[in-house]
Structure formats: C-alpha cells, structure tokens
Length: 94
Image (cartoon, rainbow, N blue to C red; front, side):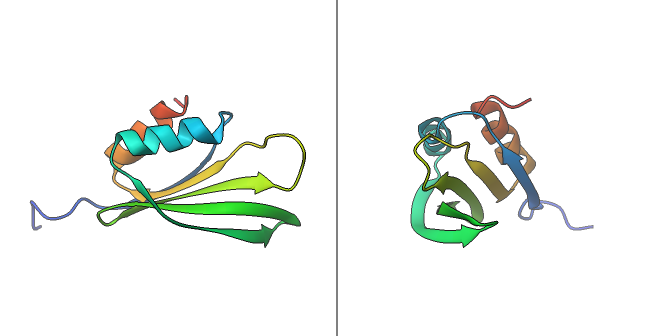
C-alpha cells in the first residue's frame, strides 16, 4: 500500500439550520473560494447552487429560493475527513 499520496476523498451531504452567510464564512475560513453559481429546478423547487473549491476538493451549497422566507442550505462535500469535520463543526453540526 502506497503512503504519502493524496488523502482519500469522501462524499457527505448535510442539511444545516444556519444562515447561508454562516456557511460561506466557514468555507472561506479554510480557504474555499466560490467558483460558480447557477439557479436550478429540483424537487419542484428553485435552488441557487454554489460551487466552492480548494485544490482538488469541492463543496456544493444549495439554497432553496423563490419563497418569501429564508430556507436552510444543503451542503455536499467531496473532500477529506478533516475538511468534512471542520465544515460540520463550523455550521453547528456534531
């Protein structure tokens, strides 16, 4: 088994009960930058999907839009365990 190479990537989706700004701040703190965003339709709803990247790791943040009240963002991370742990803790997860 070869050691010292890139960390294995994991995939995790989480729903968080915090404002989008808190998610964005947490990602910025660890060096992720917004690469692109798009409005999509999924599950009968409009969503704003934002793609963040840091090296070969990516994080997709989806915010439900179109209604008058704020919605909870969904975060999908393709990254190392330490990245996932930091993001989950940064948004109030366990």
